Amino acid sequence: MVICTSSRAIFSWTVLLALTAVLVACGNGESAAPLVGVPATDAPRIEVSLFEELLGTIPDTPDTRKSVMINDYAAVRKILELSPTSPDAEFPALLQHFIDSIGSNNTGIKTYLARGPFISGMDDRFMENKKKVYLAFDGRNVDQSVEAGIVPFVLEVVRWRFDPTATAEALAACSECPPADLESHNDVPFYSWGGDGQGKLRDRRNPPAFDHLGRGGRIAVSNEYVYRTVETPGMRALIDSGNGEVQTLAGVEEFRLLVQAMSGLGVYSAFFSNQTYKVGSNDTPDNPSIYFSFPAVLENLKKKRSGNRPCCCRMWRSLPE
View 1 (cartoon, rainbow, N blue to C red):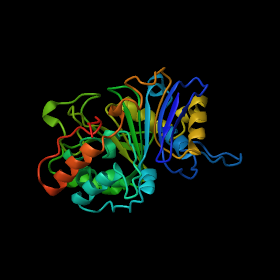
View 2: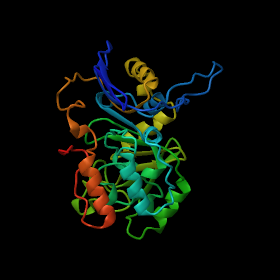
View 3: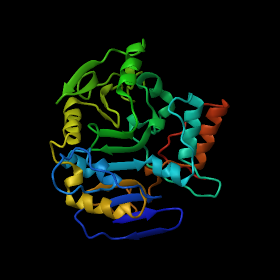
View 4: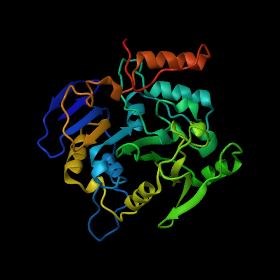
């Protein structure tokens, strides 16, 4: 089942493919981009969609086939006609950028984004850990994100513009940050904190990027991509996917055919799974917990910005208007 929503129309139809559940939100399309990790050949260059490129960063495993969430924040900014916010702007600018990115413009066009992965800076607790200070990037550096796999070993990927040297310098200058173990896989370096999947409650939301369970995880930074996992095998799998050494979800025909079809629809937020879902169940757009809630969230964020009271809303749960 495919459900597609946009500012222009809401429509649905059944897709007769093995992939049985997709939830998408539509906006303006992206231009084609080459698939990451595919070795160069003498064959003619094949242009693929942005979603295919993003699927090309995720290894094909039974768990990643069960759950893949993609967000295209650049498409949302284009729909809402938002001016780019400098990655060097101060935190109030980031807050305003976040408010604008999940809202509606002055013509009444609304966007419905799924919650982003933790490392994207576009999740429900983005204000509690200012990643820019410690990692030299945050949500303003991110144009797209992918989150795949099953809890607790979820794979996170964000895309656009990053500076590995700036990240190294920011971590070295952080007196609050516990030192990372510097590891590598196939000549790709990554930072590591703690054991695989292990966290400590006293480290919850601590710098540089400990999550709500106190897991520092693994982080790899390149000029175009940032990978995050909570265990080393997942990081190695992401690196191998990016290097074209393993099959990725972009090579799975059911996924590939669906994202190709979506390219012409201008999709900006999509959930893929090979599991059977029922429209109206807790895993469809009929359940507003998948998307950011707008009136309540925006009101709380604006109060936070003005200093009236702290923001305490949970972004993925829809509240009554």
